[in-house]
Length: 79
Image (cartoon, rainbow, N blue to C red; front, side, top):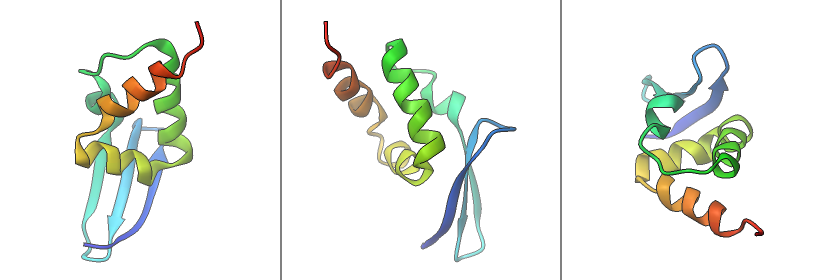
């Protein structure tokens, strides 16, 4: 399945994905992030990722690597 485009939908807080097979997928960002253990800094990084790089956000969600990304963001914080 090839992806035609992915974009952030501000009205639904979601990532909308269209494929060449004619499918339309919607990832609800709130549902995708509700069980993550995140700090305000990593939540901000996820929000920026969803808005600026929606395809990367979708890959993290489908691969199940969102918590690893959040943990990596938190380990980069300066104390």
